[in-house]
Length: 374
Image (cartoon, rainbow, N blue to C red; front, side, top):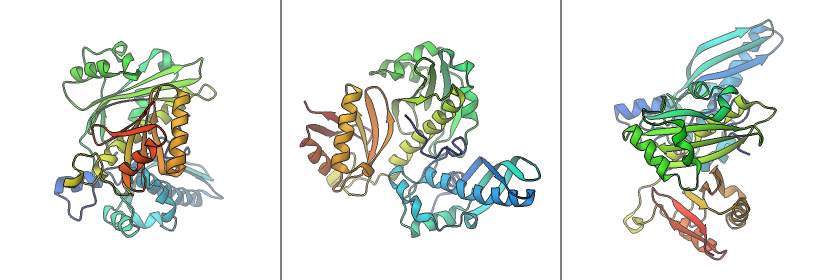
């Protein structure tokens, strides 16, 4: 089952993520784009205490800490998420520039609010530099997203409204929400989640007129108790199609949709972080998507014929590279997307996998493709 990479307590507010290289001086436009990434908007806080004043103070303190964790997940590549524990001694309030209240309500012992937290870009950058934590804080060029309900899911959750509730303007991959372009109907999108989505992707690109345009479809399979989500189109990184399935627990389709939207935004941000954090290849490595440094992330597209084959390949990867060396970013019926690290880089990994009957070869868009050799 898909799980939120940002935690279950606040999946709506935690959907923020990444964008810029580590540079000492930014042009004015880039600096503005980076500064927006340091705002965590519409973040829910809640606390109960002996009195209203204490409850509010506790909610603010806990909210600053939780919002900082969301900022960390936004601007740090997924391969460095394990470094979060190293920041346990940081007082998040020392890095907050300010906050604003979107809504609040309280009783004699409880405080509930939705807040916008703004963190100091300079202070956060300095902290991450000192702790040797990689980050990307430059926002991607804006894209458009069209949330589309397939079948009867609309009766159980408002998919477009859930996307509108996310902090799309401050995300590393800023998004604006639109409906499907004229000439493109929901019925034309069925192929996006298939083994060969190229025809459906062509139709989306033609209808969008060449703009960065992503379609997010949601279909509720009531019998299987699953929400099937497809994210496809062209974003700031390039053309792609990803399918993911989410469990619907106790009939709560709206919650599954909220989780799916958060994870989907994280996937878009992760794609951008991966590209922006990639080092410029040297002349000797110009023909490879990645040079061979041990600490660099390797984005791998895994292709398989059945779930059983996927599990076998995943076990082989775990045995060769270690279970903590890769993160499953997305899974569809016939492919999966992984972010990996391996000593010696992709060449050493390819050699190790070859001995297990697996082929790792350069693909397009600075990625690698993994298939079974026989």
